Length: 367
Image 1 (cartoon, one colour):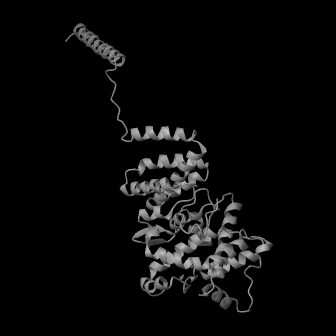
Image 2 (spheres, rainbow, N blue to C red; image 1 turned 120 degrees about the horizontal axis):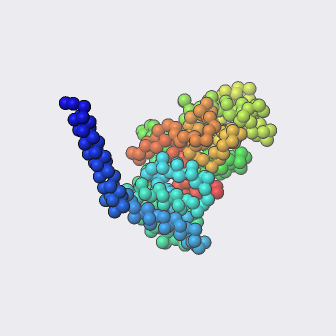
Image 3 (cartoon, rainbow, N blue to C red; image 1 turned 60 degrees about the vertical axis):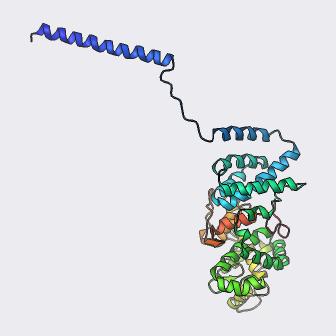
């Protein structure tokens, strides 16, 4: 093949190549122009729900005071149901709600329902919320009936809980006394007590059936943990020392320094007797309230307010001082507790009790 033949063939090849490229460009132009390349884009299965929710969220801003009160009550009620079925979701809701306004709770619940609305047990709980709401006048957001929680077969429907309720009312006066002396929310003290007692009831079923249940009394521990609150000896000693050490990050001030002063030289024996007294639980509650107050102070000094975070306080109460490390995103946890066939974390169950409405007449929720 001579040089001219080769150049001729190369020329034809280039002409064909440019023709093909041109054709592709022309076809592409018309395809874009007339929408031939458009795809039909998938529609989210919850599209209609999202639209409805968006309308409801917008409408919240225009509700009358009366209708807003009703929607707030219903939102709180739904939150209780969510708390029983999905404690992790509920904890995240609480974290967000701490930084929001009361009306934002309605919007948060509406947004949360997209992932739980199809659960038949959740639907059952919400239906009961709506049934109760239709029968009650003068609703307030925090007045959530305990029957709602029972409808979703939670810890509050167990025999263990009924035993605890009967026992704790006997200590109402002493708990309120400790609350007044320390400034610690009485319901917060009871939240720690409730979980510890439910844990104890389930750790030895025979003792529970023979003693706690028929007599409706609180369980007093005296081995590894002490008293009705299950305090460890080293924790009790730390609480005492923190009251005296003005350099401690847990120091509450001179007004609290003598709350746990001993009356005898045999400190160890007196401490044990205080905390394991079966007839007077005053010191069990006092030590616990001071622990709560010291932990809250530690976190406040670090720039984090957990005073309205019962689930975090309970987690730390269960884990002890050594695990209390202030941070922006504390995790809910602690010992695993099984109640009524369901498993809860110490902190998660305390949260559920605190906002449940259970025993609210005796130990109201502090707003």
